[in-house]
Length: 133
Image 1 (cartoon, rainbow, N blue to C red):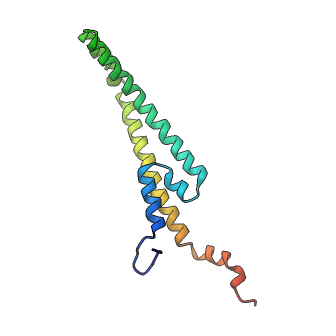
Image 2 (tube, helix red, strand yellow; image 1 turned 30 degrees about the vertical axis):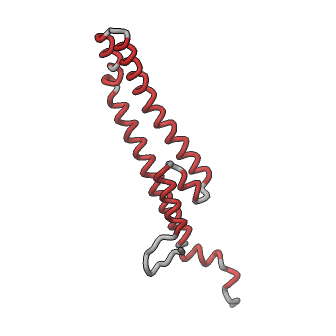
Image 3 (tube, helix red, strand yellow; image 1 turned 180 degrees about the vertical axis):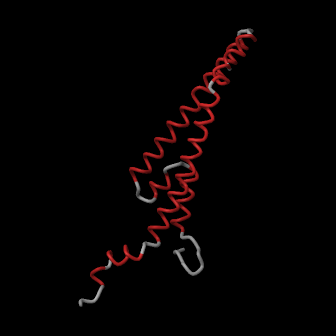
């Protein structure tokens, strides 16, 4: 299916770019041929998720290790870093969501610009098609 401006239908390429951006942040940019931006978004996403998941995982593991050792008092202390640093976790969640949404919106906009170039871009690309003055 090709893009038809009169019906407003998206092409298969548009759908593929959006679907890949929904599945993996940065994949829509990679699909659109924006390699540096795509790998950058992918790297930022991985760093953000790791920064979010590592402290949570360590606290949960510490909690269960304390419970399995029979020390209920220490189990509560294992979760204390999460309570003390909750604002950091909220900021990281917001950053991860922001990167994810940016990836989707950017993949959509980039694909739309490729499918519907601005009039100035179309003229510069087809300068040889213009009649001589």
